[in-house]
Amino acid sequence: MRPHAVHAVIAVKSLDRAKSRLADRLRPEHRARLVLAMLADTVTATTAVPEVMSVTVVTPDPSVADLAMALGADVHPEPSDADTDGLNTALAAAASALRGTHGPIALLALQADLPALRAEELSDMLATAPRGRSIVVDHAGSGTAALLVRDPLDALDPRFGPGSARSHIAAGAVDLTGDWPGLRLDVDTADDLDRAAALGAGSATRAVLHDIGWPGRVHEHVRRVC
Image (cartoon, rainbow, N blue to C red; front, side):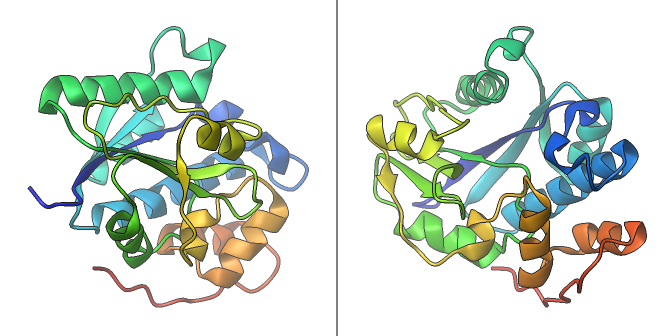
């Protein structure tokens, strides 16, 4: 196995609940399409990284599951108790299932809405991160874009949500300081989406933005893969 090998987990809620902070700019069907497109670009970039042995998407939504499988990812059903702490419960369940299948492995939890993620950024992050627990803080400075657990015996223990960066660091995670703008840029607001379009979103997100008439220039960035 590669020295920096990891198994990635990504959680996606039901499409009818997705991206509520964009409700004043996008109709529900457009938000659903955008969520699927951003997931497609996130998974595509992640699977292009040689160190990533597998990608598992945990979701209750059949459309998300179908897309994930079409992209070569595995799918894990959302646990019945996920509503109590949805994202974290879902990620922890998928991580536990992965270790049940593969044994003691390193784990990487990623946000599902990283449309400007580049494979080389993620590869560099994995090569840079120390053994143990580390995070990539999001562009806003308070959230978590990625949680990496190198110790194969250490639980994932995800703490995503408001102020998650501080919570993860308090639990022993190292704050990685690399220059990875696409990896840090999760999309929650219209401003975030504009930033992703300017930075260079993936082809699926660009296509949706063009199709729904999102204002502003959608940067045609040529992506490299590792």
